[in-house]
Length: 146
Length: 146
Length: 146
Length: 146
Image (tube, rainbow over all chains, first blue to last red; front, side):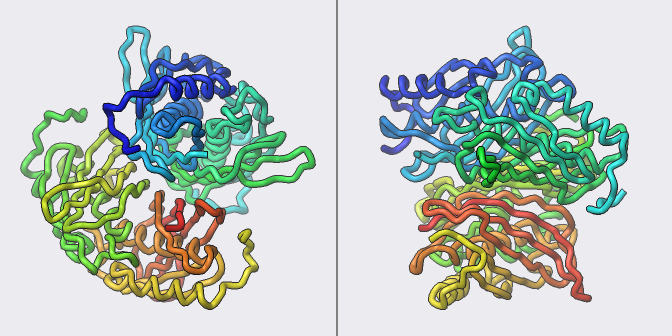
């Protein structure tokens, strides 16, 4: 199934993604939620709290990574055949600004959907109380069906 | 101060590292502890629980990343002048085996300590109930004094 | 100087980029040329020949990397003050398709232009004899003024 | 076949590696040679000449990348069944010192040899006229059988 942006996400695949997300303990611990699931893209959000902080009070790089990685993984899963599972095999993150504000919002997208491998990106933004957003982290990596 | 493996960690720097670690909310949330701090290396450990899991019951890639990133960051900080702080600017992780067992153990080390940049690595292992360990993730990245 | 996409590239900076490119022996060896230099972006092109091949006859990953890295580096340099030089400190490449065709075309762009660090991306495409292009490699990395 | 460091490289696999290397046009262009092939590791060397330089007269990041990538790829191939071919799917490089001297020497090694994926590293050193070496680049990435 070649990946095209206009393809519609089958309801069964969306359900599988939401079920899988609900089983991710770390996402619950970080109070992350799904904002959007589409074919080849997923948007997740979590509050920036002390519980995910680093030493300066910003969100820890590990929080941005985890949210971005999950967003990218489910974006990849959304383009795979029903019944698939997905694993991250590698991921690179560039941290471009301190993650301060009310929320982290991660948008994952598929750059290349392959039978053996999918290449993905995620952009993580920090959302301030006034709703404005600034990018804080950029991820690029590889997912495999498992 | 050129980096040499035989250098001794000044007590004030060790205290600064332990204080900084204690302020990392995400490390507390994940129940991470410092096992060892030395000049140019740090070892951290956390339990593998449902609270840091992914959809298959293994530890989430984000948990391995966060622990490895903190271990690598404090390894870098240990070679910087007293009073420094450290930030991750980029980090790459390769996930090489499912993170199952009782604990994740991350060993961070400095590969190149520079005035402007430090290049670091971390190895994350999963420790089983019998104490045996297997590598689950390998990180390589860059830290800057902040 | 904050980075905005609409800024105009000063002629002196464009000259400095073209002079610097002309001094890159590897770019001459690979017969690479500048197609475009703008503020925050650069496009380079080189022929796919046996001289840059790998064992299957496609362009070597090292050729895609080198072209993408130079494109990203000059994109970063274009946003720096006159008289700057630039160095790659780290770069990640995902290879998404075999690099076959007549040309490699690399488009470098700046994602975040900072005083100490710039985060960059490059997309490398293979151009066929009929002028059609397909992406073959995606790079993300960090440049510093030197 | 589980990967162990003590395993002996079958002569047919060594021949296949040397034949494959000889077909890599970019390696010939860069005058690279095989110094050593073993089970799970490969060492390559090339002269630092103007033909592989960047704008300051050091070897281009693309030269260090290409040599390190080939060394890592053949290290991976050495652990695969006879008749395999190998492709880089992603590679990250940290450049830690200017690449000046007479030679670049890249040592590739396998960190995890899997059926579907192999995780590899390479260290690239610059060798001075007196034979002394200093590390200039560190690579970590993923290879697949093709």
